[in-house]
Image 1: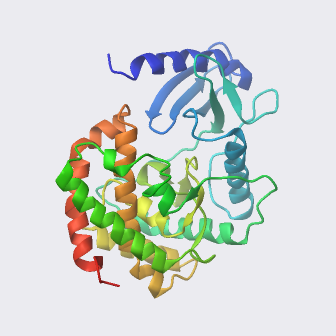
Image 2: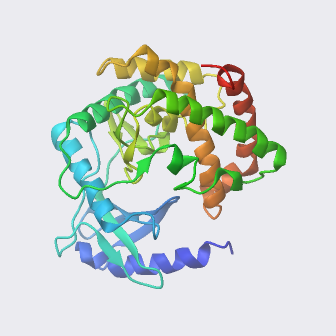
Image 3: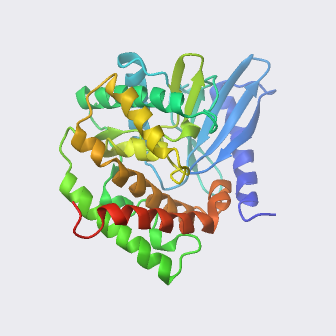
Length: 331
């Protein structure tokens, strides 16, 4: 039995007990399909002929107000920007955010089920071009949207990612970290901080973003591109969404071609200045080092365990390549 199994069994029971809140029949079943930052269930109700997705939140990560804010942006993106996202399904009491009981209460949200498939890693050029297009639509909406009163989401800046107030934990606690690796990655963190300070947080560069636009959160169905899992959305650099799109594949030799495809798709919808494009490598490595922190602080998850120490080691190789271009004294 793994360390997480007793906890997951308790949540399974809490989910089963809560399904009637959404009008599910006694025949409804909930099957866990993902355990990462949150726990996601596929809910099948044969009596109602309905499939839905239930997201159970990690305790202490978001307040109820922050979750409601995320859902408000999702609604606005569907209604105003033509972005295909999952719809929120309120419970029978009318509330979209429910609190599940148990030893460790957790918020939960039910979403409509979206068809489609995650892009295959064997053929990513066309999906990355489509991702660039939909990301530009997200950013365009964020820039012009008047956020509702009480809207609150976390901020993804250097301090909250790699600095003094890290949301996902200290990257120095990454799996397999030793003195040599820490020294190499510290040089990387310092270089990234210098570059980001120079790049700045002007309104055209820093705003409301998805913040986790990796392949697992993209669904393709024919010509339609769908975006899911806005749980990490918040205020950050727009180009960070591209860094997130390359999560866990930053080492691939075709990354330059994938970036070109993304930029090509983005520019079909919105402009991207040459100065912004030149800073893309910084955001790829910013995301990479942030994931080293995430893996260390989420060691109980299947995803973290699958990455493990090798991800930290590979990050050092990428850091060396980045520092050869952007290290001390290079602007």
